[in-house]
Length: 397
Ligand SMILES: *Cc1c(COP(=O)(O)O)cnc(C)c1O
Image 1 (spheres, rainbow, N blue to C red):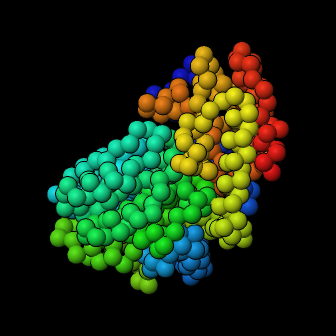
Image 2 (image 1 turned 90 degrees about the vertical axis):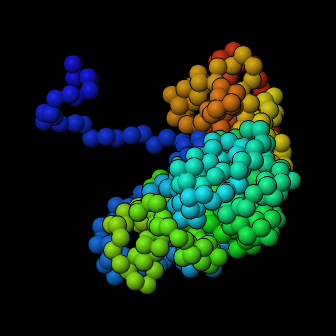
């Protein structure tokens, strides 16, 4: 009976939990460098300790660099990427507001759900999963209503599609709408360029291309967005995510709001230090190069990518599962025989694609060659004959 869930309250001792070090090449979390884990083991400070306030200042400064913004309100929300999404939407939307929501995967759907919960009216623009949203359709949707905001996912992790942001801020701003962008799987891996692209609210997560554990959601608000929030008639519906209150802790007031997750902030600080040491441009180039090598290898094996070349993410690679191959069994082989985690498809792509993440410190030549070799071996064991992609990938470097 020892394996049954405990229904009676009783004292029991448990073994220490000692997970293996997996090669995390799925849709997130991405591998966490030892430097970051060591930073998390530092002594916990009080959340108003002057030394911790200094740590917060460093994080804000480095986040501005990574977001490419001068926005004053640039902070990590104390919760995962989805809380960044929720914070972005609930601070801007008041009941009755119309919001154009672009949906081409799981995360666009999640935005629509949050807009409705906040009392807003989503005006939906769709593209088939695996394709980017058409600009003309966004324009038509903006013209069909009085939009408070345009919300779009930059890097759709569920499909591997990169959405071009060029010109979207002009489309939104000409109509009095704010531009809200989900950069959870692009920040630190692809150029996001908050100020360059005129983005008003942009959020991310720590466990994708930034390479820290999950737990914080970096977010940044333009002055235009902050003015909008100050002009609200109703209170932000979420107490925890009300940025006007959160900002009093991260801004000059240093007023207690909630206890910052101290160790997670140490982790983020160290992850951002790594980004700064490498430099954003070099980091983007690394993500692009490893993506190109993976694609060359995958195609040399006779497999196909699910997204058109010009719309592919560097951080998340959607590979079609060949006919007759069991998607889950191949993933299980990778995990059990090679210690590698990759992702399966979601929604309409379930069973149809593998999602290979090359994010943060996971985006390396070594991992590209490793996952190609593992995939080759697992496919052959499943009876799908194919050649190795390793040579073709190596030729890219
Ligand atoms: C992972 C992800 C999220 C949600 O982040 P969580 O940390 O899982 O809450 C939101 N948007 C996109 C595009 C993501 O990839």
